[in-house]
Image 1 (tube, helix red, strand yellow):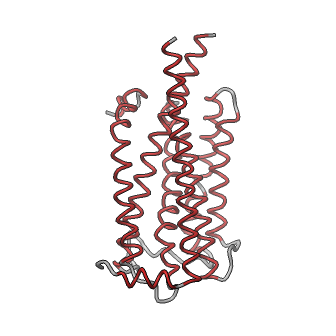
Image 2 (cartoon, one colour; image 1 turned 60 degrees about the vertical axis):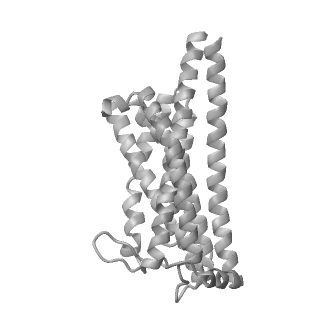
Image 3 (tube, rainbow over the protein chains, first blue to last red; image 1 turned 180 degrees about the horizontal axis):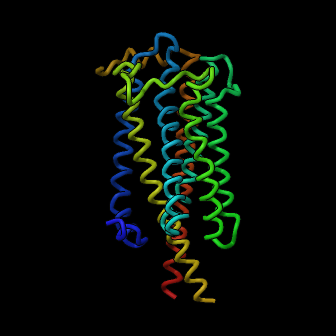
Length: 238
Length: 56
């Protein structure tokens, strides 16, 4: 199955089938997420109505980390097995990861002003998230810096693998250092600190953003495959 | 957890917090729309170019 999917044409057929379904699910989850976020979930007893920023800030933050993990996996495959599809997926993911990281930083900053009294602090969590944005931008610039795409992909994959050190720093920075940013409220190993009335819209938005990411990454993979086909045609033409 | 218009009306009336929440939602959906349309038109353009090459 993996060998079949590793073929760009087979992968393209599957992605053409999945793409509209993911877009549809994104809209459904988004509408229901909005409904519960604004009509059902109560304001927080401390933060008041600003807690509603959480429903977009947290999904963006989780995706910024998830996308990077996916890129790191692809970079490993690219370096070890020299597989083109891994490079294509990595290239497709990087702008989306940068977009979600930027959204995390901006929404976090807007949330910080009424909660902490400041737009920005050089706090461990905020700084490490900013570093993540720079790594994403570095990946985009390096992969496009060379005429030979394979060379660019290789250096970008090395950067991604080196940058993976930043992921545990982002995740556990709130536990390792004294930060303004609150510790994680949702954990796999302990019960959640969030009320179910807030948990429902949060997870609806998480799934909505996840389906948005899947549909868009499939579209970007398609564009990358087409551009490589065009390059081959141009090489044969000249 | 049902529909509660009061929750929404209270949110609309909290003037200061309202602008923080709305601006953060606007920024996120602007970014998402931007990357969606950029990707969508890029694919469309490349597909057209590929079809023209293949027709030649």
